[in-house]
Amino acid sequence: MTSVHVAVVGLGPAGALVAHRAVARGWTVDGYDPACVIDDGTVALPGWRHTYGFPVRALPAALRESVPFSTVTEQVTAHTPHLHRLHHGPYGIVDVAAARDRLSPGVRLHRTRVTDMSAAALGVDAVIDCRGVVDRPGAVRQVAYGLFLPEDAAARAGLTVGEFMDWRPSPAACSGTSGTAASGPADQAGQPETRPGKQGTGNSSPHTGTDPSFLYVQDTGTSVLAQETVLATRTPSRTLLPELRVRLLSRLGDAAAQATGTETVHFPTDRRRRPWYLGPDGRGTVTFGAAGGLTHPATGYSVAASAAAADRVLDSIVEGAPVGRILSASLAHRLRLLGAELIVRADGPTLRRFFDAFFSLPPSLQRGYLTGQGAGAVAAAMVALGCRPRDCLPFLRPLPQALRYTLKPR
Image (cartoon, rainbow, N blue to C red; front, side):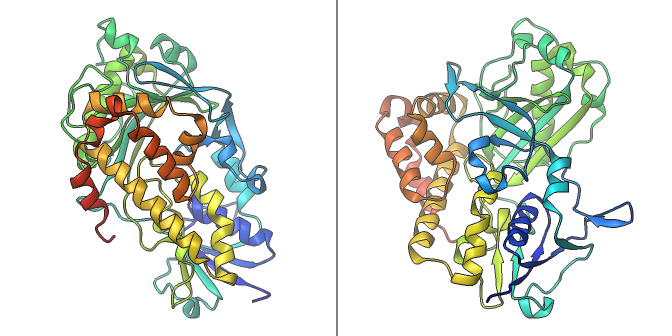
């Protein structure tokens, strides 16, 4: 194919990124999503409701100008409860409005639902399916409940921006401040569906519940996002979200009354329609983003991974997918599924010890597990953790059961 015509179906961040990279190649790109909005009489990309953050270095150079950040924190930290200064480089929060504006030029947008995903039906050379995945009972999910706070309220609650993962009780909770704040967005928000976990001793708040959780804190540019997060669980979202809200209010104390908004997160991390690295199927359809399994099973991150893989998936449309890369990406995904399954089965103290060991690894090993699609880097990090039996043995005890589940076809 010299002149390539593709249809991108689903225009969340992953779909917009791959469409943008296809336009940069000179391809003809049609984008389809019934959630597209009408802006000044023209069709625009759908609104993206969530906050997206990741290490700046995870973004490919070709997309640095197209995905701007509203804020960049030079140093992120984790508390397990020991302080770890993470060497992942600056951490950015995506400026969603600016990114939507920069990624859409050149894409012919259609506010249309596609029912036949074949290339022939859409009159194109290939279809890129970016429609995401459906959360079903039994899926491993990430669930979080967050509040947006003014900077002074966040400081009063003892929060420090740039917190990647904080397992400590909050200063407000330690001082006995009540988490039942006055009425505000924190109390008025609806309770969207949430996700699963396990019997927890040692949540990051003084409350106990079924799933250990930690606090994530970032500066969004207009406010501070404080998010109580369960990394991986099978607890239904509608069960877990109200509990996470209670934990977060307990952390924040009276500062929660000044919240200007809420954010809830719940999505499956172990589901995909078809692996992204296989290239087009017999109908000329390639699957990408969360639909292709680019959500990291053990962290929930997907936007940076989709950005990094966009050109690879476009290459597969014209060149096919190299067998070596297929095998490596497949094994990397299975290893991360295993990590997620072990997280699901761990209690609070076990997770704190595990992450204390993980954040003590050399930065290159940490990055190898957190980013990239190569099995070698993922395996190297897991082997290094296995060499720390004092910290990791409790985490690894359910390995036989977790391995059996991980190897099931999906």
